[in-house]
Image (cartoon, rainbow, N blue to C red; front, side):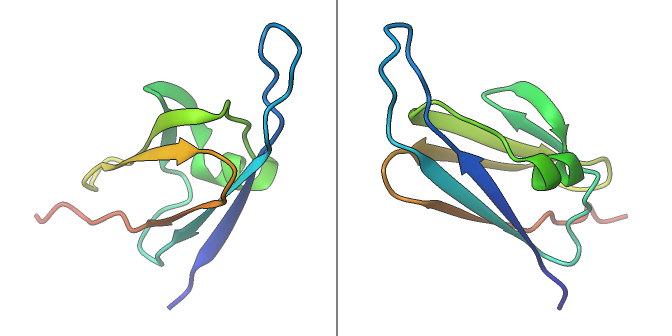
Length: 99
């Protein structure tokens, strides 16, 4: 089974006072049936196709965030994550909608 591991650097998020917060890394393991061109949303805001996010990474502020991955013909994948001092690891397995 082919799997793609996405390492997303969730780095120092500066608040308005200029004080940085701890860096957090997030890894996403995709199943073979999860398409790389699926759309990624963070907190209901489109951030790009999964392949682009995998290649370039993304930064999140420390705190709670909703990660959603969508692709026509698949059930949406949705998780609530907390970006904190520990690494966040997600397994994304988009399930096809039956015909």
